[in-house]
Length: 213
Image 1: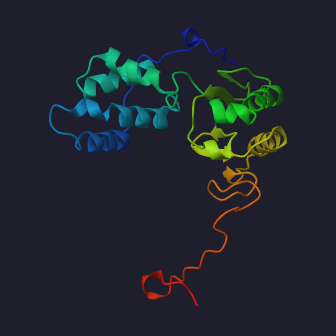
Image 2: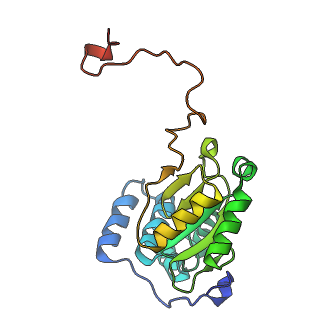
Image 3: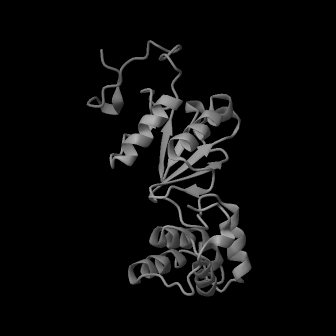
């Protein structure tokens, strides 16, 4: 189990993109004008993370070489964004949003539920490698707070019971549908629509989507 201290992470001596990922990196770089290749640093870091599961220092150095950047400039980008993992993470990487709307709706309970159920703290990985846990700032789904991001998916409108069920499902190898866990569509209010209830149904078969009679 990691204690979240990056000094304990074993860093590989070397890194290279796979042929497929190097081809993808080259396609990304080609989108930018000559001399502006540094603009590709974010997508290249993401490609490296997708390949390795995290972003080792050797990958950052390799990207710096490809983009003709000072390595420190790549480090600055990688350490700024929580989307980049600078140490190995679990198969299911849990990111609990803690910004004000989620905090008001129970973000602290989400974090404590994860800690209690998984037996880990923040920036730690379970012994079986299945789960890792961090807190992050706004995930942009404020209307459906609280929110926990699992890998690339948002699970919204959570409470401790629903989160425990979600963790159990993931541990069993099942992936529950992401999005609102109370059945809300988009950011509609809890309990259903309260205004503009009488809206004419749009018939897509009619020219211009004219309202049905």
